[in-house]
Image 1: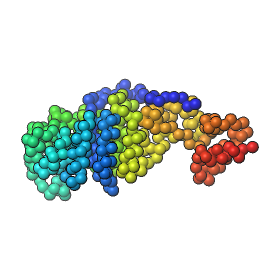
Image 2: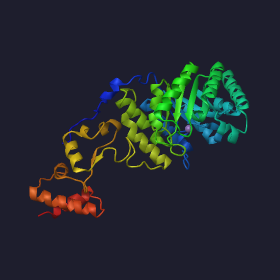
Image 3: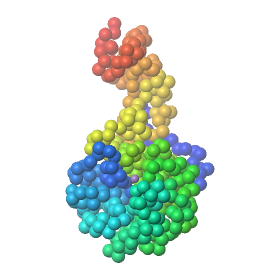
Image 4: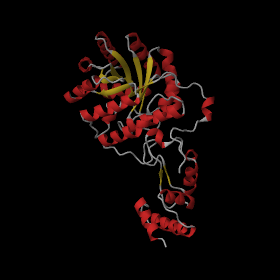
Length: 390
Ligand code: MN
C-alpha cells in the first residue's frame, strides 16, 4: 500500500551550483583500529574478520585492521586479515618506532600508517621533545619502512592544532623521504567544514602526495569535515562504522557513504548492506545505536505524526530523503499520540481490518489515551483495541 520507492532518493538541486565536488576518492575504514580504541571496546579475532569481510563486500578500498604492536593476538589478527585475500587493501598503525614497522612487516600488510604528533601541545606534554627531534625520529622510521619495501602513510597526529607552516614543512619532508600518502588527523575534532576545506587546499599546495583526512567528531562535524576535505581534494577518507571511536568517535561510514551517494552521485559502494554491518558492530562493540542516529538509528525511517504518516502513505519521499530499502532498513509507522485518522486507517487496513468511521474514531481515541499514559501502542495492543470495538 505504501508506494514502492526502493532505490529512490531526492536529489539536492542546489548541488548543481557547487564546485568543486570530490574527485577521485577512496575510503579507509578504521573501525578495527580507531573504533576499537573506544573505551571499553575490544573485538575478538573472529569479530574483526567478520567486519573486515563485510567492509570488503561493500567495496571499501582500505581496511585499517589494527595496531599490531598492542598484543600478540592483535598481531595475529592483523596478519590473518591481511591474508584473507580481500579486494580491499589492508593497513595497520605504527608509532614512529622501528619496532612497530618490524611488526607491520611481519603482519604482511599492504601498507603501514606511521604517525607522529606535530602540535606544540603534544610535543610538550606527550613526547617531551623538540619539534626537530620528533621530526628526525619520524623521518628515520619513514626511511626504515621505505627501505623495507613498505607503502607508507605518514600521518600527523593533532595536525589541526599544528602551526600550518610547520605542518606543510613536515609533510614536504615526508614527501621527500618517499611517503606514499600524507594524512591530516583532526585528532580532537576542532575543524569545521570551512577550515577543513582551507587546510586541505593549503596542504595540497605544499605537496603532490595523496592527502588523507581523518576526522573526529567532538563537535559533531566529522562527516561534514571529511566531505569538505574531499571537496578540497583529499583522496583518502577515514571512517568508522556507526561513528565509533575515541570520545565522540570518528566520521561515520554509513553517513559518509549515503552522503556520497545522495549528494555527490557516487554509487559504487553497496550501501544495501549498511544496516547489517551496523548491527554487527553494535553487537560486537556493545555500543547501542541511538534511535535518532542518521541512516542506521531505529527512528531513521519511523513516522508517527498524523500529517507525516498521511503523506508518507501516499509518497514516502515526502518525508524521507531516501528509501529505507536502499540501506537494508524498513519503514515503520508508529502509532501514538500524534497519529491522525488517515494514518491509523492506513495501518489498520494493512493489518487486514476494515472498520467503520465510528469504529475508527473510537480506536483513535483509545490509541491517544494509551500513548498519553506513556504506554507504547504496539501491534498486539492495537489488535487488542480493535477486538474491543463494538
Ligand atoms: Mn583517530
